[in-house]
Image 1 (cartoon, rainbow, N blue to C red):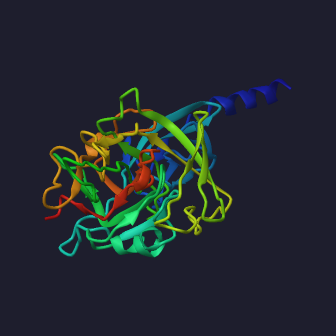
Image 2: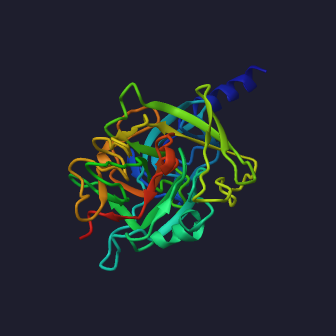
Length: 365
């Protein structure tokens, strides 16, 4: 028995700790979305040991290698540990996966190249020429067509044939049809932007609002929600919001049809969410007006924007904020969303509904 214990003790004393040979030895690693980066660990002295790989704290492999593939852009921490009864070896990697960028080429267009989604809220032009999906497609390559977004929350999502770069100053122009003094009529639209972080060409990544002049004011309501109910006839469209209010989008005799978007996926009710801007309707004598905001909204006759010749509002990607209101440093963006920002009625002129005629990348001349 003593002899056996002696042999076991000698064997244990001869075990060496892991002498690890890493395939990638650097601490900082650059990777790409949807592209495999192979990490592996071998031995320098032939001594066996066990392996553990943790990605952001979660065990992802217990063999000698791990194939890292990122579903979207971001920063990841990969921790490796090689260990046996004699000791352990550790190494941490910081993996940076940049946002995929579609570069500008000599054939790149400054105009919209894709309409990814169009869903208007109820409105007088919905279900007729200015409020149909086929009309939205006409914004591609043009700034002279027109699409109506209906009441609050109605939106359009579009993209370009390249990533729009955040340069110094304004980066994006969105065309509308507001009128100026003395009879202002603006229908302000909120603008949001997104990056194709997962590289799939779809607008399914995080959205950031371009915070305009009203963003931080007490009269602006964040996280607003409104639900419209389909009347299934030429009748007022009822709505309820998450502020305890209710009302109607009123029909008029100039547009005798259902104001609810009949091509919407849900034919019973439809809910929109976003930032609610305060109403700005009023009268100049007997004329109904809708005053513009200072800056940062489309279809709004804003000071300093090019509404004398080109009828567009300009936007700086540096205005971007996340859902908590924190500023976000976006080097590029791939998708733009515009939605009607007010829940307001202009009497005989109908509901306030943002119109869009097109958009251009100001970085391309």
